[in-house]
Length: 334
Ligand SMILES: NC(=O)c1ccc[n+]([C@@H]2O[C@H](COP(=O)([O-])OP(=O)(O)OC[C@H]3O[C@@H](n4cnc5c(N)ncnc54)[C@H](O)[C@@H]3O)[C@@H](O)[C@H]2O)c1
Image (cartoon, rainbow, N blue to C red; front, side, top):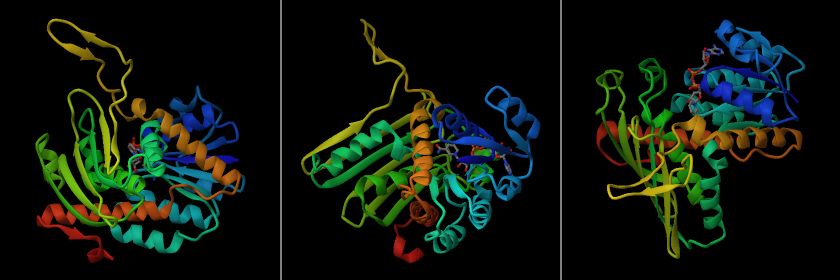
């Protein structure tokens, strides 16, 4: 299976590295990014790739079976449509699109196409989230009543990234929205959300928040409470707790070691793993491996366009809720 990667920034490089190092069934043939020189310099030690500036080139290449799209979010919609039109299987970074209108159009036109489309909600492939999901599915926790998730980045993103990101609900909290659907197996019916600008006024000037919360009411009655921040001084804070009628399950942060040092002054552990390339590396490898397996074995992908669309519906509801200071029902947006 031959693959072209479009967009060789942080995520494009992670996916390329994982394909080369962990997925022997796949061969990365083309890397497409307007930053050709940087891409050449980066890719030199990893493999013998054809490096091009124009993302249409892998789509026109008849040898290419699939593309990985890891470009800025504003380009996702157009690139996905073109890739499908060219008959390529697609693994695409989240979010599906930068706005609800584009996401809806993609959902309506691409839900039943013959090529595979996987959206990169990597937490579904993470060891902690998966284990909690297995407890829920086996009935060990009983009926799920409450979910709490926390996601806090270790440092602020570049302001230029913020401007193109689609906003904190579309870019960042989108992972929690998908997690809520994944863990409860239910759809969101109502969202109440809010945000503040506490870290950098330029984020506010760009029309965004850097600190935010959301409460989701699910169709089955479960409630999900989410908090996010663009900066936690102690590292990448990724926690989740599911509380059900028969018990609860909680995932704490992963650390470099599990050593606890206790002295007269304090009880200390390692800090959480620094950021997503450290914390979620195994999940990134798992998700791309699963995509290649779906293509080669002609199996449905486990997270596709519908999950991408539903998470964007929730993000839009959260955005409206935060700006209008009121609960927003998903039905309002359909
Ligand atoms: N799953 C996750 O945990 C996670 C984490 C971070 C980012 N992301 C997502 O990954 C995507 C990329 O984010 P990133 O952090 O890697 O961004 P980035 O800015 O590091 O990389 C984007 C790359 O796309 C390239 N690019 C720009 N225009 C292009 C074009 N026309 N054709 C081809 N390439 C083009 C840029 O030159 C850059 O190299 C975003 O959609 C983001 O939401 C996902």
